Length: 254
Image (cartoon, rainbow, N blue to C red; front, side, top):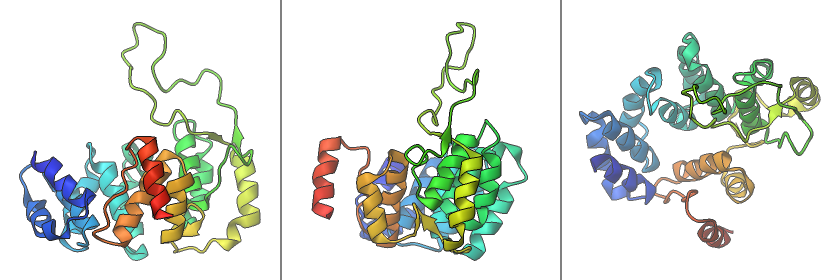
């Protein structure tokens, strides 16, 4: 109940509840610590909440990736690279690290992402992170390839296989590293190292609103979070609400 209340404070933009969120950064329950920090960020805190999330970033668990992505959205470039370097030595952090580079948005990491597209285990994640930076629809621009034969990352028809988890990346395209490298060689010079890009542009309100209207769901979730972080106290756009309600609210935003 405490954790859900803390989360709600940030979702609805209650800046008057910021002191309560900060108070729970020392809560005995890690769930409350995370949501207290999450809401504190949305409500404008850039001090204590940062330090409370750093330990969660380094510890595998249900909130590791959320903590990493939230910090990367607000940290300056001088703090982003040390965080990514701290994640890198642990091979188990690779999926988190790949997603994190897309959120960091620095074109400096694009060559590394293109190299990772040859690794079937993270190729689609690398393609998604590249899209988060460059803003390209890989399928629309014919920058994808066919899925390799015999590759299964989700449930199959074998009754003796205990894996029943759906593949969270099932709907992502399989990027073609050769085509993407060719595109980057021709266009990469217009992206500046050290700048945080989101869907092809430096992070800005107009682009985030465009992504909220037109993007895929994980892109829309990131755009909604950016909008609240850029204007603390702005209610978080509910990207999980029924589509007809979202369309009505988006019309008002426009």
